[in-house]
Image 1 (cartoon, rainbow, N blue to C red):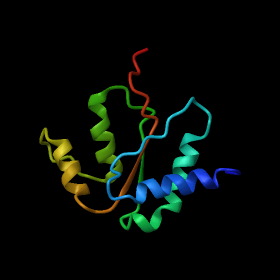
Image 2 (image 1 turned 90 degrees about the horizontal axis):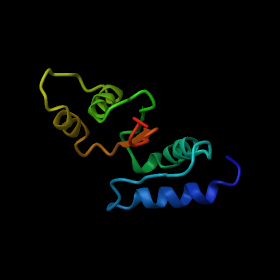
Image 3 (image 1 turned 90 degrees about the vertical axis):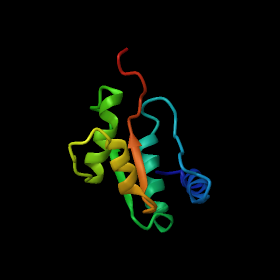
Image 4 (image 1 turned 180 degrees about the horizontal axis):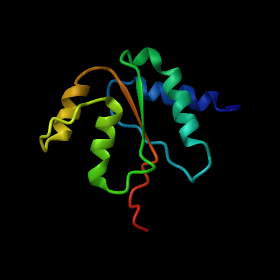
Length: 110
């Protein structure tokens, strides 16, 4: 994206900080948040040795379906237990993976 180099560099700098565990890009639809996130993910490769996983949440309609969508994107098998959060957390551990959640829109019932 033309003219976004400074933004990409700034966001990569924030992600590289050990204290950064969550970073949110916000803005109205169509401004390029997803493209910016993907540019950042590519530029931040050296900070995430396990790579990047994009989780597309556009089709997720309830909060209960978010963790299963993340588990599926990560390839975490469904063990049949109710603790999918624990399974995802265990899988992630200290892998050094960048998880990009796209289309996290909040309440979709409106």
